[in-house]
Image (tube, rainbow, N blue to C red; front, side, top):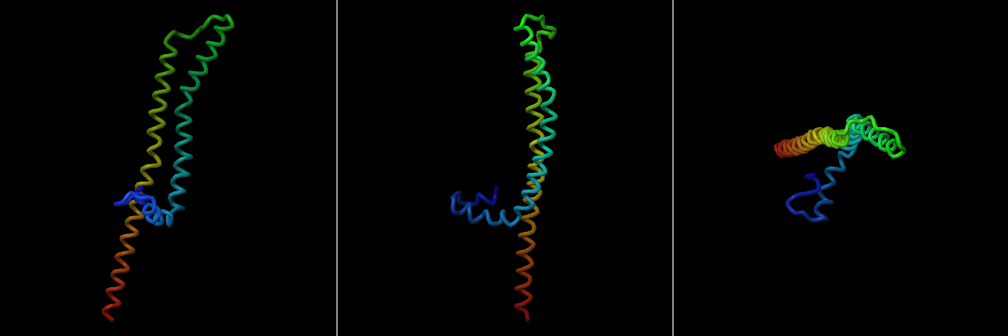
Amino acid sequence: MDYMLGERRDFWCSLKRMKDGYQYWGAFFIILFCGGLIMGVLAAVSWLPAGILAYAGHASLMGVLEGDATDLPSYVPALVVFFFMLASVIANVFSWLTLFPLSYLYGSVEARKQEKASFEEEERRLQGLQ
């Protein structure tokens, strides 16, 4: 995000600052892709109980509309709401799995930039002594 925003929040300045981010696009892409896959699988697993319960409630309702007796307890709608809220919280927690590696990658990129600047400064200083 720092590559897009600087001291000035201008569109053209943000394009100039994004060149640093484009240098490391491969690492950013790999982290986002792998993290997205892992997050997607974990989120799908966390949504399974809510989906199964919602399907059971829907199937029971369709049976009641056809004239069958329901065998589900009366608290199933509240249980469905609870499980959907719980699944959404768990899926949001899984979304942090991509943010932490991205923050570490950002720190690594910044450390590389500082190390490169320090190396170039030391090289210029040594060339000035000769």
